[in-house]
Image 1 (tube, rainbow, N blue to C red):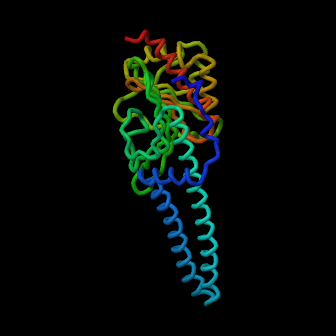
Image 2 (cartoon, rainbow, N blue to C red):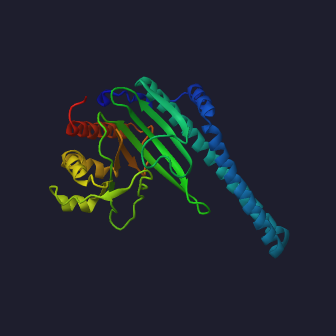
Length: 299
């Protein structure tokens, strides 16, 4: 796939009502439309519960007038929830329609929703209620996949973690490693989880050119005993000035696992924004090409 020749027009073309409706039917088959509807119903249910409690409390304090106040507030709040849910659902249908057209025009496959996906990588196979959305897959000599992934962590105090990801296959199996951005300024940054299937150790970047600066910007880990190999590989590929700046500017973390390069971001990467596809796919392929070249010719 030549990422420089992608047809991005479907991402901005007008979305006709009939075409969007067909995309909605495909989403229903994947279970995504039902998921959105359930979310809106839950919010409305919470509003009703809050209003009921408010009516009891204010009614006991101020009589019928006090009981009526939470009901009025509930009606207004429910109206806002309904409108917001419809707008969000409508925007989601248009996004899925455009991504479907984008995938079809460029010889890719589009999957609106994949439950519990089985893929290599530290953000997969972890947590509960794991779902990938808006997955676009390009087949070919180098398989590429872009999507958004979310899962829940914890038990009673469950937290929903969301990631955008882009992956590309490599010609060779590369040393397992992760390259993560450190804190930026005083604000903490969402950090990808550590892999569950392998123990990683910190990689000392002091031997690289500008190693101190790189160590201040990135936390690098590799399999125990492979740190020198990983440091050398990254020094010839990811840690060249031009790629470092692009990775940092986009807030990306990086993982190499088995024969796959994975970029992750706290922001969604699969979207109907053409600009995202313009910078993401070239960067992904350039890093993958650099790693392939450093590892040697294809067998």
